[in-house]
Length: 222
Image (tube, rainbow, N blue to C red; front, top):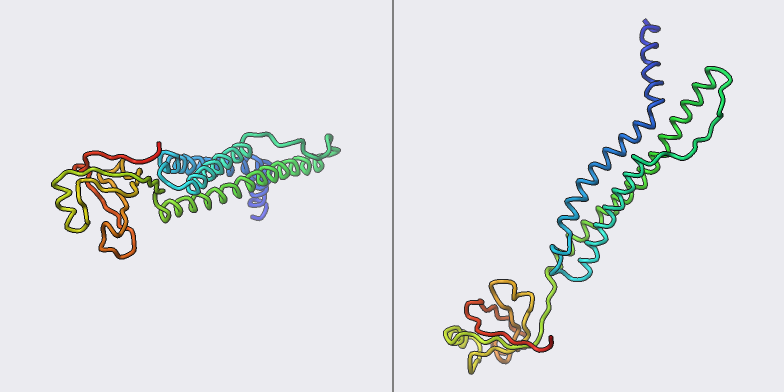
Protein backbone atom coordinates (compact mmCIF):
# COMPACT_ATOMS: atom_id res chain seq x y z
CA UNK A 1 0.00 0.00 0.00
CA UNK A 2 2.82 2.39 0.91
CA UNK A 3 4.66 1.75 -2.36
CA UNK A 4 1.45 2.29 -4.34
CA UNK A 5 1.02 5.73 -2.74
CA UNK A 6 4.68 6.73 -2.59
CA UNK A 7 5.26 6.35 -6.30
CA UNK A 8 2.56 8.77 -7.53
CA UNK A 9 3.21 11.16 -4.62
CA UNK A 10 6.92 11.34 -5.38
CA UNK A 11 6.25 11.82 -9.07
CA UNK A 12 3.81 14.66 -8.37
CA UNK A 13 6.16 16.27 -5.83
CA UNK A 14 9.22 16.31 -8.06
CA UNK A 15 7.21 17.38 -11.07
CA UNK A 16 5.90 20.33 -9.06
CA UNK A 17 9.41 21.15 -7.85
CA UNK A 18 10.75 21.18 -11.42
CA UNK A 19 7.90 23.50 -12.47
CA UNK A 20 8.32 25.81 -9.45
CA UNK A 21 9.71 28.59 -11.66
CA UNK A 22 6.64 28.44 -13.88
CA UNK A 23 4.44 28.45 -10.79
CA UNK A 24 6.12 31.60 -9.49
CA UNK A 25 5.59 33.30 -12.86
CA UNK A 26 1.93 32.25 -12.82
CA UNK A 27 1.49 33.85 -9.39
CA UNK A 28 3.16 37.03 -10.60
CA UNK A 29 0.96 37.06 -13.71
CA UNK A 30 -2.19 36.75 -11.59
CA UNK A 31 -1.02 39.64 -9.43
CA UNK A 32 -0.17 41.65 -12.55
CA UNK A 33 -3.67 41.15 -13.96
CA UNK A 34 -5.24 42.35 -10.73
CA UNK A 35 -2.97 45.36 -10.42
CA UNK A 36 -3.40 46.31 -14.07
CA UNK A 37 -7.17 46.26 -13.69
CA UNK A 38 -6.95 48.29 -10.49
CA UNK A 39 -4.48 50.72 -12.03
CA UNK A 40 -6.83 51.29 -14.96
CA UNK A 41 -9.61 52.31 -12.59
CA UNK A 42 -7.29 54.56 -10.59
CA UNK A 43 -5.97 56.25 -13.73
CA UNK A 44 -9.54 56.90 -14.84
CA UNK A 45 -10.53 58.29 -11.44
CA UNK A 46 -7.42 60.35 -10.66
CA UNK A 47 -6.80 62.14 -13.93
CA UNK A 48 -6.26 65.89 -14.09
CA UNK A 49 -9.74 66.15 -15.61
CA UNK A 50 -11.24 64.81 -12.38
CA UNK A 51 -8.86 66.79 -10.16
CA UNK A 52 -8.75 69.99 -12.20
CA UNK A 53 -10.60 72.00 -9.54
CA UNK A 54 -8.63 70.58 -6.61
CA UNK A 55 -5.62 72.13 -4.81
CA UNK A 56 -2.13 71.50 -6.16
CA UNK A 57 -1.28 69.12 -3.32
CA UNK A 58 -4.21 66.89 -4.24
CA UNK A 59 -3.24 66.95 -7.91
CA UNK A 60 0.36 66.01 -7.08
CA UNK A 61 -0.84 63.13 -4.90
CA UNK A 62 -3.01 61.92 -7.78
CA UNK A 63 -0.08 62.04 -10.20
CA UNK A 64 2.07 60.14 -7.69
CA UNK A 65 -0.61 57.46 -7.27
CA UNK A 66 -0.95 56.95 -11.02
CA UNK A 67 2.84 56.80 -11.45
CA UNK A 68 3.21 54.21 -8.68
CA UNK A 69 0.45 52.00 -10.11
CA UNK A 70 2.06 52.07 -13.54
CA UNK A 71 5.48 51.36 -12.02
CA UNK A 72 4.02 48.39 -10.13
CA UNK A 73 2.51 47.07 -13.36
CA UNK A 74 5.93 47.31 -15.04
CA UNK A 75 7.56 45.42 -12.14
CA UNK A 76 4.98 42.66 -12.35
CA UNK A 77 5.57 42.45 -16.10
CA UNK A 78 9.29 42.11 -15.38
CA UNK A 79 8.62 39.28 -12.95
CA UNK A 80 6.45 37.47 -15.48
CA UNK A 81 8.26 38.00 -18.78
CA UNK A 82 11.92 38.81 -18.16
CA UNK A 83 14.21 35.77 -18.13
CA UNK A 84 16.17 35.16 -14.97
CA UNK A 85 19.94 35.61 -14.93
CA UNK A 86 22.47 32.85 -15.23
CA UNK A 87 21.84 30.31 -12.50
CA UNK A 88 24.67 28.81 -10.50
CA UNK A 89 25.24 25.11 -10.68
CA UNK A 90 27.35 22.41 -12.32
CA UNK A 91 27.28 22.21 -16.11
CA UNK A 92 27.72 18.41 -16.05
CA UNK A 93 26.22 15.71 -13.88
CA UNK A 94 28.22 12.67 -12.83
CA UNK A 95 25.21 10.48 -12.20
CA UNK A 96 21.42 10.56 -12.09
CA UNK A 97 21.33 11.85 -8.51
CA UNK A 98 23.57 14.80 -9.39
CA UNK A 99 21.35 15.51 -12.40
CA UNK A 100 18.22 15.45 -10.25
CA UNK A 101 19.77 17.75 -7.64
CA UNK A 102 20.98 20.16 -10.33
CA UNK A 103 17.54 20.34 -11.96
CA UNK A 104 15.80 20.92 -8.63
CA UNK A 105 18.31 23.58 -7.59
CA UNK A 106 17.92 25.47 -10.86
CA UNK A 107 14.15 25.34 -10.52
CA UNK A 108 14.30 26.58 -6.93
CA UNK A 109 16.71 29.39 -7.85
CA UNK A 110 14.49 30.51 -10.72
CA UNK A 111 11.42 30.53 -8.48
CA UNK A 112 13.32 32.49 -5.83
CA UNK A 113 14.36 35.16 -8.36
CA UNK A 114 10.81 35.53 -9.68
CA UNK A 115 9.42 35.70 -6.13
CA UNK A 116 11.93 38.44 -5.25
CA UNK A 117 10.82 40.46 -8.26
CA UNK A 118 7.20 39.99 -7.30
CA UNK A 119 7.97 41.05 -3.72
CA UNK A 120 9.37 44.35 -5.00
CA UNK A 121 6.29 44.84 -7.16
CA UNK A 122 4.04 44.09 -4.18
CA UNK A 123 5.74 46.79 -2.12
CA UNK A 124 5.29 49.37 -4.87
CA UNK A 125 1.64 48.34 -5.25
CA UNK A 126 1.08 48.82 -1.50
CA UNK A 127 2.67 52.25 -1.73
CA UNK A 128 0.43 53.09 -4.69
CA UNK A 129 -2.62 52.01 -2.71
CA UNK A 130 -1.61 54.20 0.23
CA UNK A 131 -1.06 57.24 -2.00
CA UNK A 132 -4.39 56.58 -3.74
CA UNK A 133 -6.22 56.54 -0.41
CA UNK A 134 -4.42 59.76 0.55
CA UNK A 135 -5.50 61.38 -2.73
CA UNK A 136 -9.13 60.39 -2.24
CA UNK A 137 -9.01 61.73 1.32
CA UNK A 138 -7.50 65.04 0.22
CA UNK A 139 -10.08 65.38 -2.55
CA UNK A 140 -12.94 64.65 -0.16
CA UNK A 141 -11.76 66.79 2.76
CA UNK A 142 -10.05 69.63 0.94
CA UNK A 143 -12.79 70.23 -1.59
CA UNK A 144 -12.29 72.27 -4.74
CA UNK A 145 -9.72 75.02 -4.68
CA UNK A 146 -10.94 78.60 -4.47
CA UNK A 147 -9.90 81.16 -7.03
CA UNK A 148 -11.29 84.51 -5.94
CA UNK A 149 -10.68 87.86 -7.61
CA UNK A 150 -11.93 91.34 -6.83
CA UNK A 151 -14.75 92.43 -9.08
CA UNK A 152 -18.41 93.30 -9.42
CA UNK A 153 -21.61 91.55 -10.48
CA UNK A 154 -24.49 93.41 -12.09
CA UNK A 155 -27.86 91.84 -11.28
CA UNK A 156 -31.37 92.34 -12.57
CA UNK A 157 -33.56 95.05 -10.96
CA UNK A 158 -35.94 92.43 -9.59
CA UNK A 159 -33.14 90.52 -7.90
CA UNK A 160 -31.60 93.75 -6.59
CA UNK A 161 -34.94 94.66 -5.02
CA UNK A 162 -35.09 91.28 -3.28
CA UNK A 163 -31.53 91.37 -1.99
CA UNK A 164 -31.94 94.86 -0.50
CA UNK A 165 -33.91 93.21 2.30
CA UNK A 166 -30.67 91.69 3.64
CA UNK A 167 -27.95 93.87 2.08
CA UNK A 168 -27.45 97.61 1.82
CA UNK A 169 -27.42 98.10 -1.96
CA UNK A 170 -27.96 101.42 -3.71
CA UNK A 171 -28.01 100.06 -7.26
CA UNK A 172 -27.90 96.78 -9.17
CA UNK A 173 -24.15 96.30 -8.67
CA UNK A 174 -22.60 94.04 -6.04
CA UNK A 175 -18.86 94.43 -5.39
CA UNK A 176 -16.62 91.96 -3.62
CA UNK A 177 -14.45 88.92 -4.34
CA UNK A 178 -15.82 86.64 -7.05
CA UNK A 179 -15.17 82.90 -6.95
CA UNK A 180 -14.15 82.18 -10.53
CA UNK A 181 -14.69 78.43 -10.10
CA UNK A 182 -18.38 79.08 -9.48
CA UNK A 183 -18.79 80.48 -13.00
CA UNK A 184 -19.08 76.90 -14.29
CA UNK A 185 -22.04 76.25 -11.96
CA UNK A 186 -25.65 77.52 -12.03
CA UNK A 187 -24.75 80.09 -9.36
CA UNK A 188 -22.15 82.82 -8.99
CA UNK A 189 -20.53 83.14 -5.57
CA UNK A 190 -19.31 86.54 -4.42
CA UNK A 191 -17.91 87.43 -1.01
CA UNK A 192 -18.82 90.91 0.26
CA UNK A 193 -17.78 92.90 3.31
CA UNK A 194 -19.94 92.56 6.41
CA UNK A 195 -20.61 96.28 6.52
CA UNK A 196 -22.47 96.04 3.25
CA UNK A 197 -24.23 92.78 3.92
CA UNK A 198 -24.79 90.44 6.81
CA UNK A 199 -25.68 92.87 9.57
CA UNK A 200 -22.16 94.12 10.34
CA UNK A 201 -21.10 91.09 12.38
CA UNK A 202 -17.44 91.64 11.57
CA UNK A 203 -17.27 88.69 9.20
CA UNK A 204 -17.49 88.44 5.46
CA UNK A 205 -20.71 87.36 3.82
CA UNK A 206 -20.94 85.12 0.79
CA UNK A 207 -23.78 85.68 -1.65
CA UNK A 208 -24.93 82.94 -3.98
CA UNK A 209 -26.52 84.58 -6.99
CA UNK A 210 -28.43 82.52 -9.57
CA UNK A 211 -27.10 83.05 -13.08
CA UNK A 212 -30.57 83.91 -14.30
CA UNK A 213 -30.33 87.12 -12.24
CA UNK A 214 -26.84 88.06 -13.45
CA UNK A 215 -26.56 90.72 -16.15
CA UNK A 216 -22.79 91.25 -16.26
CA UNK A 217 -19.60 90.27 -14.43
CA UNK A 218 -16.33 92.19 -14.27
CA UNK A 219 -13.17 91.48 -12.27
CA UNK A 220 -9.68 92.86 -11.93
CA UNK A 221 -6.60 91.35 -13.50
CA UNK A 222 -6.44 89.00 -16.45
